[in-house]
Length: 166
Image (cartoon, rainbow, N blue to C red; front, top):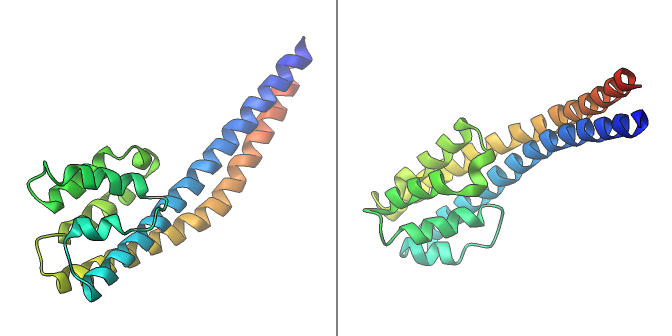
């Protein structure tokens, strides 16, 4: 019976370590996808300016797709596209894993939507796309280093639990 408990403890600890590492990977994926989407929108605004809803509809489906769906749903009821963006950033369930810094960047990126002309909005979106990409690269490095540490700690914790139980 002790062996079954020790194996269960090992599995729980290993899964905990893997889940912590997976959250880092998810954060990187979301921020990288968001950066790509923002850059795409900036290019659309610069070369083919039109209504924001038309541009968002044409976005390729990526890791931030749920955010864009929330944004589109909020445009009719919000007072502005900027407000719809802010609401979508706060209510998007995919963003629950993001840090406050990452959410702030996403929210700030929306401040240039609809309140400036297309050229200025495109410049601001390029800027925020670059910032999101920098943050995504930092997350990628963290994911590799911290992810490996989390997995090793999970395994070591599981082995320690086995020694305590047996």
